[in-house]
Image (cartoon, rainbow, N blue to C red; front, side, top):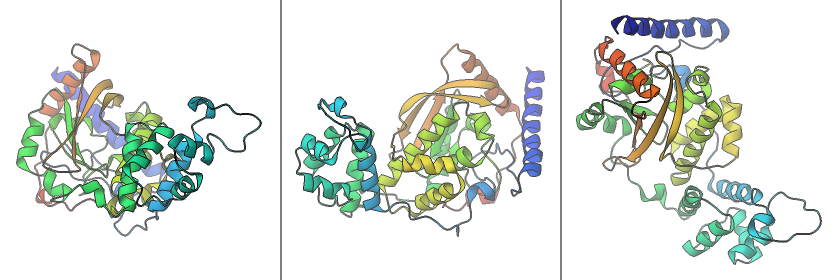
Length: 360
Protein backbone atom coordinates (compact mmCIF):
# COMPACT_ATOMS: atom_id res chain seq x y z
CA UNK A 1 0.00 0.00 0.00
CA UNK A 2 2.81 2.40 0.92
CA UNK A 3 4.42 1.78 -2.46
CA UNK A 4 1.09 2.46 -4.17
CA UNK A 5 0.57 5.65 -2.23
CA UNK A 6 4.10 6.80 -2.89
CA UNK A 7 3.59 6.08 -6.56
CA UNK A 8 0.30 8.00 -6.45
CA UNK A 9 1.95 10.98 -4.82
CA UNK A 10 4.60 10.93 -7.52
CA UNK A 11 1.92 10.80 -10.20
CA UNK A 12 0.14 13.81 -8.77
CA UNK A 13 3.35 15.81 -8.54
CA UNK A 14 4.21 14.83 -12.11
CA UNK A 15 0.69 15.73 -13.22
CA UNK A 16 0.85 19.21 -11.69
CA UNK A 17 4.42 19.96 -12.74
CA UNK A 18 3.92 18.53 -16.22
CA UNK A 19 0.73 20.50 -16.73
CA UNK A 20 2.42 23.68 -15.63
CA UNK A 21 5.37 23.16 -17.96
CA UNK A 22 3.16 22.25 -20.89
CA UNK A 23 0.85 25.18 -20.44
CA UNK A 24 3.75 27.53 -19.89
CA UNK A 25 5.01 26.73 -23.36
CA UNK A 26 1.63 26.62 -25.13
CA UNK A 27 -0.19 29.51 -23.49
CA UNK A 28 1.04 32.99 -22.48
CA UNK A 29 -0.95 32.59 -19.25
CA UNK A 30 0.17 33.67 -15.78
CA UNK A 31 1.62 31.18 -13.30
CA UNK A 32 -0.51 28.02 -13.17
CA UNK A 33 -1.95 26.72 -9.96
CA UNK A 34 -0.33 24.16 -7.70
CA UNK A 35 -2.25 21.74 -5.57
CA UNK A 36 -3.18 22.68 -2.03
CA UNK A 37 -4.41 20.09 0.46
CA UNK A 38 -4.25 22.29 3.55
CA UNK A 39 -6.96 22.11 6.20
CA UNK A 40 -9.69 24.62 6.96
CA UNK A 41 -11.51 26.82 4.50
CA UNK A 42 -10.06 26.54 1.02
CA UNK A 43 -8.16 29.31 -0.63
CA UNK A 44 -6.70 30.04 -3.93
CA UNK A 45 -6.59 29.62 -7.61
CA UNK A 46 -4.40 31.61 -9.97
CA UNK A 47 -5.36 35.05 -11.16
CA UNK A 48 -6.00 33.86 -14.74
CA UNK A 49 -8.83 31.69 -13.36
CA UNK A 50 -9.94 34.19 -10.77
CA UNK A 51 -10.21 37.29 -12.90
CA UNK A 52 -9.39 40.75 -11.52
CA UNK A 53 -12.03 42.63 -9.61
CA UNK A 54 -11.97 45.45 -12.14
CA UNK A 55 -12.71 43.13 -15.07
CA UNK A 56 -15.42 44.82 -17.20
CA UNK A 57 -18.73 42.98 -16.87
CA UNK A 58 -21.41 42.52 -19.51
CA UNK A 59 -24.96 43.71 -18.96
CA UNK A 60 -26.06 40.09 -18.68
CA UNK A 61 -29.00 40.17 -16.28
CA UNK A 62 -31.45 42.73 -17.65
CA UNK A 63 -34.80 41.50 -16.35
CA UNK A 64 -36.93 42.31 -19.39
CA UNK A 65 -34.47 40.72 -21.75
CA UNK A 66 -34.22 37.68 -19.49
CA UNK A 67 -38.00 37.24 -19.50
CA UNK A 68 -38.26 37.79 -23.25
CA UNK A 69 -35.54 35.33 -24.16
CA UNK A 70 -36.65 32.73 -21.63
CA UNK A 71 -40.23 32.71 -22.92
CA UNK A 72 -39.25 32.73 -26.59
CA UNK A 73 -36.78 29.85 -26.16
CA UNK A 74 -39.38 27.81 -24.24
CA UNK A 75 -42.04 28.51 -26.88
CA UNK A 76 -39.69 27.53 -29.70
CA UNK A 77 -39.10 24.05 -28.33
CA UNK A 78 -42.79 23.05 -28.09
CA UNK A 79 -44.37 21.72 -31.28
CA UNK A 80 -48.12 21.91 -32.00
CA UNK A 81 -48.23 18.12 -32.00
CA UNK A 82 -46.93 18.02 -28.43
CA UNK A 83 -49.94 20.00 -27.21
CA UNK A 84 -52.47 18.26 -29.43
CA UNK A 85 -52.93 21.01 -32.00
CA UNK A 86 -53.69 20.19 -35.63
CA UNK A 87 -51.81 22.39 -38.09
CA UNK A 88 -51.99 22.87 -41.83
CA UNK A 89 -49.61 24.53 -44.27
CA UNK A 90 -46.08 25.76 -43.64
CA UNK A 91 -44.99 27.53 -40.45
CA UNK A 92 -42.48 30.36 -40.42
CA UNK A 93 -41.35 29.92 -36.82
CA UNK A 94 -40.17 26.89 -34.86
CA UNK A 95 -42.44 25.71 -32.11
CA UNK A 96 -45.68 27.40 -31.12
CA UNK A 97 -46.97 30.78 -32.24
CA UNK A 98 -47.71 33.45 -29.66
CA UNK A 99 -51.43 33.10 -30.32
CA UNK A 100 -51.24 29.37 -29.66
CA UNK A 101 -49.47 29.86 -26.33
CA UNK A 102 -52.05 32.49 -25.38
CA UNK A 103 -54.87 30.08 -26.18
CA UNK A 104 -53.31 27.26 -24.17
CA UNK A 105 -52.75 29.57 -21.20
CA UNK A 106 -56.20 31.17 -21.39
CA UNK A 107 -54.75 34.63 -21.98
CA UNK A 108 -55.44 37.24 -24.60
CA UNK A 109 -52.92 37.40 -27.42
CA UNK A 110 -52.21 41.04 -26.55
CA UNK A 111 -51.47 40.22 -22.91
CA UNK A 112 -49.19 37.29 -23.74
CA UNK A 113 -47.35 39.46 -26.29
CA UNK A 114 -46.69 41.98 -23.49
CA UNK A 115 -45.34 39.22 -21.27
CA UNK A 116 -43.05 37.96 -24.00
CA UNK A 117 -41.73 41.48 -24.50
CA UNK A 118 -40.53 41.26 -20.90
CA UNK A 119 -43.35 43.23 -19.27
CA UNK A 120 -44.00 40.62 -16.60
CA UNK A 121 -44.25 42.93 -13.57
CA UNK A 122 -47.60 42.51 -11.85
CA UNK A 123 -48.37 39.12 -13.38
CA UNK A 124 -50.39 37.06 -10.91
CA UNK A 125 -49.38 33.63 -9.66
CA UNK A 126 -52.31 32.08 -11.53
CA UNK A 127 -51.12 33.65 -14.80
CA UNK A 128 -47.59 32.35 -14.24
CA UNK A 129 -48.90 28.87 -13.46
CA UNK A 130 -51.09 28.86 -16.57
CA UNK A 131 -48.13 29.97 -18.64
CA UNK A 132 -45.94 27.27 -17.08
CA UNK A 133 -48.50 24.62 -18.01
CA UNK A 134 -48.88 25.92 -21.57
CA UNK A 135 -45.12 25.86 -22.13
CA UNK A 136 -44.73 22.52 -20.34
CA UNK A 137 -42.11 23.91 -17.95
CA UNK A 138 -40.51 21.53 -15.49
CA UNK A 139 -40.30 22.37 -11.79
CA UNK A 140 -37.00 24.22 -12.08
CA UNK A 141 -38.19 26.25 -15.08
CA UNK A 142 -41.47 27.08 -13.35
CA UNK A 143 -39.59 28.33 -10.27
CA UNK A 144 -37.29 30.33 -12.55
CA UNK A 145 -40.28 32.05 -14.20
CA UNK A 146 -41.64 32.98 -10.76
CA UNK A 147 -38.20 34.30 -9.77
CA UNK A 148 -38.07 36.50 -12.88
CA UNK A 149 -41.54 37.85 -12.06
CA UNK A 150 -40.55 38.59 -8.46
CA UNK A 151 -37.46 40.41 -9.67
CA UNK A 152 -39.60 42.51 -12.03
CA UNK A 153 -41.81 43.38 -9.06
CA UNK A 154 -38.74 44.55 -7.12
CA UNK A 155 -38.58 41.63 -4.67
CA UNK A 156 -34.85 40.84 -4.33
CA UNK A 157 -33.26 37.41 -4.14
CA UNK A 158 -36.60 35.60 -3.86
CA UNK A 159 -36.80 36.82 -0.27
CA UNK A 160 -33.50 35.12 0.60
CA UNK A 161 -31.30 36.81 3.19
CA UNK A 162 -27.54 36.49 3.42
CA UNK A 163 -26.41 37.24 6.95
CA UNK A 164 -22.64 37.09 6.43
CA UNK A 165 -20.14 36.88 3.63
CA UNK A 166 -19.64 33.38 2.20
CA UNK A 167 -15.94 33.27 3.09
CA UNK A 168 -16.72 34.00 6.74
CA UNK A 169 -19.58 31.50 6.79
CA UNK A 170 -17.45 28.70 5.34
CA UNK A 171 -14.67 29.31 7.90
CA UNK A 172 -16.96 28.50 10.85
CA UNK A 173 -15.31 25.77 12.88
CA UNK A 174 -18.56 23.87 13.43
CA UNK A 175 -19.13 23.69 9.67
CA UNK A 176 -15.57 22.46 9.10
CA UNK A 177 -16.00 19.88 11.86
CA UNK A 178 -19.16 18.64 10.15
CA UNK A 179 -17.29 18.32 6.86
CA UNK A 180 -14.40 16.42 8.44
CA UNK A 181 -16.85 14.04 10.12
CA UNK A 182 -17.65 12.73 6.63
CA UNK A 183 -14.75 10.36 6.07
CA UNK A 184 -15.94 7.99 3.32
CA UNK A 185 -17.20 10.58 0.86
CA UNK A 186 -16.19 13.82 -0.81
CA UNK A 187 -17.90 16.71 1.01
CA UNK A 188 -17.70 20.38 0.12
CA UNK A 189 -19.53 23.69 0.45
CA UNK A 190 -20.40 25.73 -2.65
CA UNK A 191 -21.95 29.17 -3.01
CA UNK A 192 -24.24 30.54 -5.78
CA UNK A 193 -21.18 31.80 -7.68
CA UNK A 194 -19.79 28.24 -7.99
CA UNK A 195 -17.04 29.07 -5.50
CA UNK A 196 -15.62 26.04 -3.69
CA UNK A 197 -15.57 27.43 -0.16
CA UNK A 198 -14.56 24.48 2.04
CA UNK A 199 -14.08 20.71 1.86
CA UNK A 200 -13.23 17.75 4.01
CA UNK A 201 -9.83 16.07 3.75
CA UNK A 202 -10.96 13.65 1.04
CA UNK A 203 -12.52 16.54 -0.86
CA UNK A 204 -9.20 18.40 -0.97
CA UNK A 205 -7.52 15.35 -2.45
CA UNK A 206 -10.39 14.78 -4.87
CA UNK A 207 -10.41 18.39 -6.12
CA UNK A 208 -6.60 18.70 -6.27
CA UNK A 209 -6.75 19.49 -10.05
CA UNK A 210 -8.98 22.48 -9.18
CA UNK A 211 -7.50 23.83 -5.96
CA UNK A 212 -4.54 26.21 -6.14
CA UNK A 213 -2.65 28.53 -3.82
CA UNK A 214 -3.25 31.91 -5.43
CA UNK A 215 -4.81 33.41 -2.29
CA UNK A 216 -8.50 33.19 -3.22
CA UNK A 217 -11.27 30.65 -3.39
CA UNK A 218 -11.31 28.21 -6.34
CA UNK A 219 -14.23 28.57 -8.72
CA UNK A 220 -15.77 25.51 -10.35
CA UNK A 221 -17.23 27.46 -13.29
CA UNK A 222 -13.88 29.03 -14.18
CA UNK A 223 -12.21 25.62 -13.94
CA UNK A 224 -14.93 24.11 -16.14
CA UNK A 225 -14.65 26.63 -18.98
CA UNK A 226 -11.18 28.16 -18.74
CA UNK A 227 -8.85 25.35 -17.64
CA UNK A 228 -7.95 22.68 -20.24
CA UNK A 229 -7.46 20.18 -17.39
CA UNK A 230 -11.24 20.16 -16.87
CA UNK A 231 -11.72 18.03 -19.99
CA UNK A 232 -9.52 15.35 -18.43
CA UNK A 233 -11.10 15.59 -14.98
CA UNK A 234 -14.66 15.51 -16.39
CA UNK A 235 -15.04 12.70 -18.98
CA UNK A 236 -18.57 13.97 -19.64
CA UNK A 237 -17.37 17.54 -20.07
CA UNK A 238 -20.23 18.69 -22.34
CA UNK A 239 -22.84 17.46 -19.87
CA UNK A 240 -21.02 19.11 -16.96
CA UNK A 241 -20.86 22.37 -18.90
CA UNK A 242 -24.63 22.35 -19.48
CA UNK A 243 -25.27 21.58 -15.81
CA UNK A 244 -22.95 24.34 -14.63
CA UNK A 245 -24.57 27.01 -16.82
CA UNK A 246 -28.07 25.82 -15.98
CA UNK A 247 -27.38 26.16 -12.25
CA UNK A 248 -25.90 29.64 -12.77
CA UNK A 249 -28.96 30.65 -14.84
CA UNK A 250 -31.21 29.57 -11.99
CA UNK A 251 -29.21 31.65 -9.52
CA UNK A 252 -29.30 34.68 -11.82
CA UNK A 253 -33.09 34.45 -11.91
CA UNK A 254 -33.26 34.37 -8.13
CA UNK A 255 -31.05 37.41 -7.71
CA UNK A 256 -30.62 39.43 -10.92
CA UNK A 257 -28.83 42.19 -8.99
CA UNK A 258 -26.04 39.93 -7.72
CA UNK A 259 -23.02 41.88 -8.97
CA UNK A 260 -20.58 39.07 -8.29
CA UNK A 261 -22.58 36.66 -10.43
CA UNK A 262 -22.95 39.28 -13.16
CA UNK A 263 -19.19 39.79 -13.24
CA UNK A 264 -18.57 36.04 -13.41
CA UNK A 265 -21.05 35.58 -16.26
CA UNK A 266 -19.55 38.54 -18.10
CA UNK A 267 -16.03 37.18 -17.71
CA UNK A 268 -16.93 33.68 -18.89
CA UNK A 269 -19.02 35.04 -21.77
CA UNK A 270 -16.06 36.99 -23.12
CA UNK A 271 -13.55 34.15 -22.66
CA UNK A 272 -15.50 31.02 -23.60
CA UNK A 273 -17.52 30.53 -26.77
CA UNK A 274 -19.12 27.43 -25.26
CA UNK A 275 -20.25 29.28 -22.15
CA UNK A 276 -21.68 32.11 -24.25
CA UNK A 277 -23.65 29.65 -26.40
CA UNK A 278 -25.02 27.75 -23.40
CA UNK A 279 -25.91 30.96 -21.56
CA UNK A 280 -27.92 32.14 -24.57
CA UNK A 281 -29.99 28.93 -24.48
CA UNK A 282 -31.64 30.05 -21.18
CA UNK A 283 -31.81 26.50 -19.86
CA UNK A 284 -32.13 26.26 -16.07
CA UNK A 285 -31.65 23.40 -13.64
CA UNK A 286 -31.10 22.51 -10.01
CA UNK A 287 -28.45 20.08 -8.82
CA UNK A 288 -30.30 17.93 -6.29
CA UNK A 289 -29.13 14.38 -6.81
CA UNK A 290 -27.61 12.19 -9.50
CA UNK A 291 -24.46 10.40 -10.66
CA UNK A 292 -21.28 11.79 -12.21
CA UNK A 293 -18.08 10.35 -13.70
CA UNK A 294 -14.63 11.73 -12.97
CA UNK A 295 -11.10 10.84 -14.10
CA UNK A 296 -8.80 11.53 -11.17
CA UNK A 297 -5.03 11.82 -11.80
CA UNK A 298 -4.22 9.54 -8.84
CA UNK A 299 -6.84 6.77 -8.78
CA UNK A 300 -8.39 6.95 -12.25
CA UNK A 301 -12.08 6.70 -13.11
CA UNK A 302 -14.65 7.31 -10.38
CA UNK A 303 -18.42 7.01 -10.70
CA UNK A 304 -19.97 8.84 -7.75
CA UNK A 305 -23.51 9.55 -6.60
CA UNK A 306 -24.16 13.03 -5.24
CA UNK A 307 -26.66 14.66 -2.90
CA UNK A 308 -27.04 18.42 -2.50
CA UNK A 309 -28.21 19.77 0.88
CA UNK A 310 -29.13 23.37 1.72
CA UNK A 311 -27.27 24.89 4.67
CA UNK A 312 -30.09 26.44 6.70
CA UNK A 313 -27.81 28.68 8.74
CA UNK A 314 -26.25 30.16 5.60
CA UNK A 315 -28.91 30.90 2.95
CA UNK A 316 -27.46 30.47 -0.52
CA UNK A 317 -24.75 27.99 0.47
CA UNK A 318 -25.12 24.27 -0.21
CA UNK A 319 -23.34 21.15 1.02
CA UNK A 320 -22.63 18.49 -1.59
CA UNK A 321 -21.57 14.95 -0.77
CA UNK A 322 -20.17 12.50 -3.35
CA UNK A 323 -20.20 8.82 -2.43
CA UNK A 324 -19.51 5.55 -4.26
CA UNK A 325 -21.72 2.47 -4.37
CA UNK A 326 -20.51 0.09 -1.63
CA UNK A 327 -18.35 -2.73 -3.00
CA UNK A 328 -17.87 -1.04 -6.38
CA UNK A 329 -14.49 -0.34 -8.02
CA UNK A 330 -15.14 3.37 -7.41
CA UNK A 331 -15.57 2.72 -3.68
CA UNK A 332 -12.19 0.98 -3.57
CA UNK A 333 -10.53 3.80 -5.50
CA UNK A 334 -12.12 6.38 -3.21
CA UNK A 335 -10.68 4.53 -0.19
CA UNK A 336 -7.26 4.54 -1.84
CA UNK A 337 -7.55 8.29 -2.40
CA UNK A 338 -8.59 8.77 1.24
CA UNK A 339 -5.54 6.77 2.38
CA UNK A 340 -3.27 8.85 0.18
CA UNK A 341 -4.83 12.08 1.51
CA UNK A 342 -4.36 10.92 5.10
CA UNK A 343 -0.65 10.22 4.60
CA UNK A 344 0.27 13.10 2.31
CA UNK A 345 1.98 15.99 4.12
CA UNK A 346 -0.31 19.02 4.42
CA UNK A 347 1.09 22.57 4.50
CA UNK A 348 0.39 24.52 7.65
CA UNK A 349 -2.66 26.78 7.53
CA UNK A 350 -1.61 30.39 7.00
CA UNK A 351 -3.21 33.55 8.31
CA UNK A 352 -4.34 34.64 4.86
CA UNK A 353 -6.46 31.49 4.63
CA UNK A 354 -8.54 32.69 7.57
CA UNK A 355 -8.70 36.23 6.22
CA UNK A 356 -9.33 35.43 2.56
CA UNK A 357 -11.49 38.15 1.08
CA UNK A 358 -14.98 37.43 -0.24
CA UNK A 359 -15.07 36.08 -3.80
CA UNK A 360 -16.18 38.52 -6.42
